[in-house]
Length: 75
Image 1 (cartoon, helix red, strand yellow):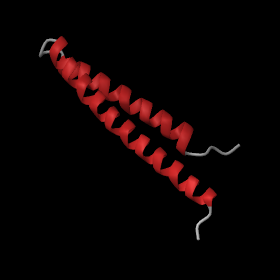
Image 2 (tube, rainbow, N blue to C red):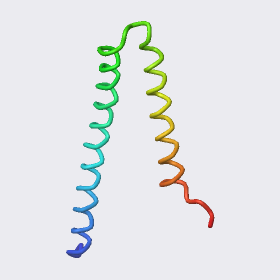
Image 3 (cartoon, rainbow, N blue to C red):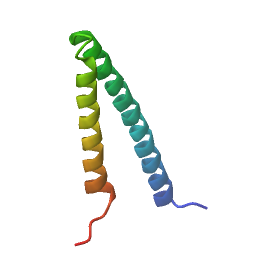
């Protein structure tokens, strides 16, 4: 039989995974909303510039987070 502590651990891991799924969905929605905002606020001639800047900033944030949080640096 599974102990109470194991069941609690599984429960908290499940809650964490569900929260991460919701966070991922929210990030995708935010990304596409900002893309739409760029289309609304800026003239069609300048949209590619702002979309490129936005894409570069998202990429820079992702690289930073991967480097800082996921890849363990040797110390």
